[in-house]
Amino acid sequence: MVHAHSRRRALIVEDNKDIRDLLVQIVTAQGFTAFEAETGAEGLELVQAGAMNLITLDLNLPDMDGIEVCRKVRELSDAYVLMITARVDEIDRLNGLETGADDYISKPFSPRELQARISALFRRPRSPEPEAASGAQEREHAAEVQRSLLPGAAVLLDGYEIGGGCRPARNVGGDFFDWNATEEGLQLTVADAMGKGMGAALIAATVRAVLRTSIKHTDLDTAFNAAGGILEKDLEQAGSFATVFHARLNADCGTMGYVDAGHGLAMHVHDGGLSRLSSGGPPVGAVPGAVWTSGSIVLAPGDAMVVVSDGLLDAFDSVEAAMAAVAAVVDAREKAQDASDAILELAHGEGITDDVTAVVVRRSPVVGGLAPGPDR
Amino acid sequence: MNFTVDTAAESYAEVKGAGRLNMVSAAKLREVVSDVVAGGSNHVVINMAEMDFMDSSGLGALIGCLKIARQAGGDLRIANVQSQVKMVLELTNMNRVLTPYDNVEAAFADV
Image 1 (spheres, rainbow over the protein chains, first blue to last red):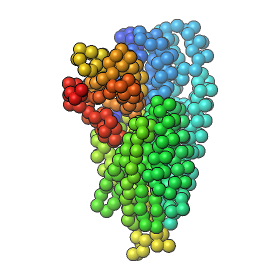
Image 2 (cartoon, rainbow over the protein chains, first blue to last red):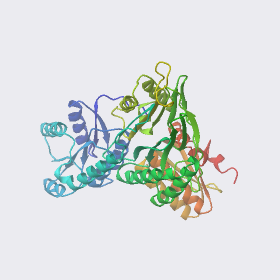
Image 3 (cartoon, rainbow over the protein chains, first blue to last red):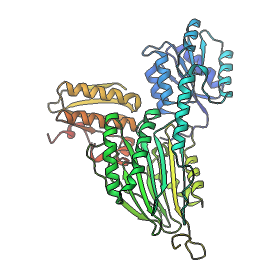
Image 4 (cartoon, each protein chain N blue to C red):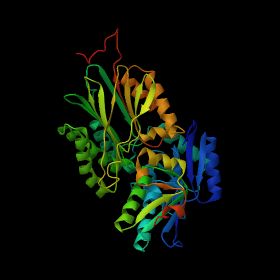
């Protein structure tokens, strides 16, 4: 799970060994670490396994059509894709297709031409090119919509501070967080829908909407189980599930009631270190008829509750190591938003392929013997 | 990932694969298991000895396969679970439903 690569990564998908060797030579000379695949299936496994920056893709592979491989790559990765075809006339056809490729080159090619094409790709910002315009525009729009669903401004709550951030691995993703003010304090949700891309984002939006309206139940267990029951049917039909962390803060006493539905990555950061929050049941939609139970913690002045998503784990050897690093980062920062930004930075390696989310709720420390807020 | 099916045992069918259980291989696993169940073996063991990675789509496939087996009146169990896969099951609390067994034979020892 550890990815500490500082070099850019290139994947060569090509069944002809001579051409593959040549391509490896070219990209290595350009400073890439090269990975090789002989078939489309092997290539897709490697794309899924590690964040690639560049993929060269032969159009005629033994097991799959290169166009199909390219479409699948696009579901998994933002890497620049350079298609390589043996036929010049194929290029016209390819240009008319929504393959998601960034450029095409025909065999035989000169090493110098290929190098120039690769350099050109990396000079331009990652943006949709004409061949993928409508699909890319749609994805971009979906990403905008998804961003607009994230809480815009922090809830203003005396004595508390809240910060959060989300970095989708691609345009749209299954991770989201949400918070809103309630009569007692605030309600907070962090969730991760199965899979990646648009399908996961649609599920995420549904989960958000259903949990938002669950506030009508005053009891947290009742609220979550009612929401879980509604979502279960939708998720079942979609063959999907979502891990959900949902909490309600009573600002006066600092009590945070929560339900952890298969999320597993929430913690209480306090004087003595960190305590992970207990699980209250399986992910929503994973087990028919599931029942969830809530737990609670009390945030003392200076304490924080932190929730991250599993994308962060890609950067660490173990869950414990990841949690300890998160707690250290939160400890070292006063502002909740700074802490949340710093957590996302922990997951900034090139090997990170999943969405990453972090939310931090901090109860303000006692200043001059008075806790601001809770005694207002 | 390619999956192989072994129906030599009397009480269950064993499905084995090697590599990463992710979005790409998840769909395949669902297909393989539904074929196995449709073929009359509703007790299925997934031998995960050589599956060293599973993401959320992979977990989704296991959950889907479990539903398929249970709907057919059987069950699906997992054996030889590797550390990363075990971690995902524990984090998501799914180890209560998909309990890892030490080996394939132990999975349906009670049946």
